[in-house]
Length: 414
Image (tube, rainbow, N blue to C red; front, top):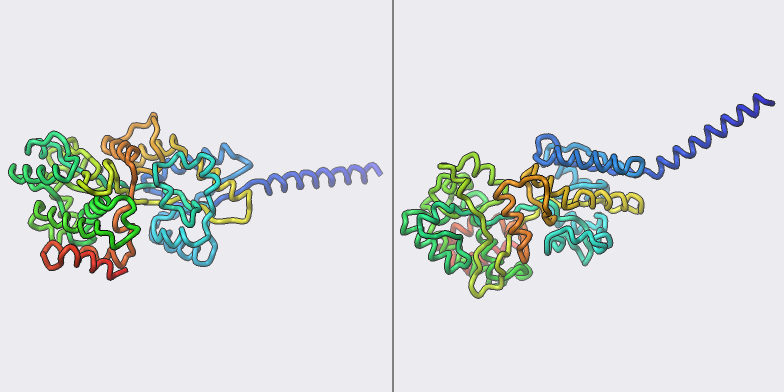
C-alpha cells in the first residue's frame, strides 16, 4: 500500500508539473520576424541587439525570433506570396508594393494603441501614409528624406553666404553662379531621371501644397513642369540623357553647385567628393515658391520601410506584437539605430548619447521642424506614370512637349 501511495504521489506530482509547464508554455507568445536587416545590412547589429534585449526583458512571456532574409528581392517575393494566400508573418517590414499590403485587410489594426499616446513618437503627418479607411495598419519607420544639397564654397564664390529661401532668390543665385563660371544645378533625364524627379516633387508640393496629389489635374503639376524646364537652362550640357553617375559626378567634382539626393549619398560625399568638398556641403529644404500653397520648411521624404504585424484572432499575440513594435519605435532606441546605421526614421529625434554624422543630424532637425513631409512623385504615382517620366521630361526639356502636354502624357498612363 505504501508503495502504491508513493507511486500515485509521484504520478500526481508529475501531472502537476506537466500542467504547470504546459500552462507557462501556453502563456508564452512567440513572434516570428522574417527580417532583411541582417548580415551586412547597416542596421543588422543594432536590430539584433534590440531583439535580444526585448527577449530578455520579456523572458517567459514573449519571444521574438528573427528569420534571416539577406536577399531583398527574395524577401519581397516571399511576402507577396504570403499576403496573397493570407499567411502573413507575425512581424515584417514592407519596402515595396506598399498599397498592396496596406489595403489587403491582413495587417494588425494599430489604431487604438496609437491613440493611447504611441502616435506622439512620430513626426507630424507620418501616420497619414499608413492609414486606410481611418485605421492605422502599419508604422512608417525608415525614411528617405531628400533635401537640397549645396556647395557652400561655390555659392560663396558667387557672393552668397546662405542658400536661397525663395525661388526668386534661387533664380538670382543661379545667375550669379553662372556669372562666376559655375554651373548651378545637376539635372538628368536618363535612367529614372532621379535627381530631376526629386526637384519636380519639391516643386509640385511647393506650388500646390502637401495635398496636391489628391488631384492629378491640379494646375501645380503644369507650373512645376514649367519651372523645372527653366532649371535646365542652368544645368550641364549633358543633362538630357544623363544618368545618376553623370548628374552626381558633376556635383562631387564641384562642377555644379546645387544637387538633390538623400542620406545614403552622404558616404559618397565623404569618399568621392573632390577637394574635401564634403566639409563644404550644406543641406536645406526646398525654397518657398512665391504665391504657392506650400509652406516654408516643407520636406520631401519617402518611406523606405514600414513596420507591420499580421492580423490575428489571438488577443495575446496581437498584444505581444504591439508591445514589440512599441519597443522598436521608442525614440531613444531609434536615435541609437540612426546613429549607428546612418539611416533616418519617422520617429521624432531626442537627445542621445550617440553622435550623429553632421549632415544626418541636420536632416533630422529639419525634418522634425517641417510642417509636413510628403513622399516624392515616384511614390505617389502608379508605376506606369513614373516609368513615363524620364522620356516625357526629355521631351519637355527639348521643346517637343509643352508643360501642359508633359502633364497630359503622364496622366494618360494612369
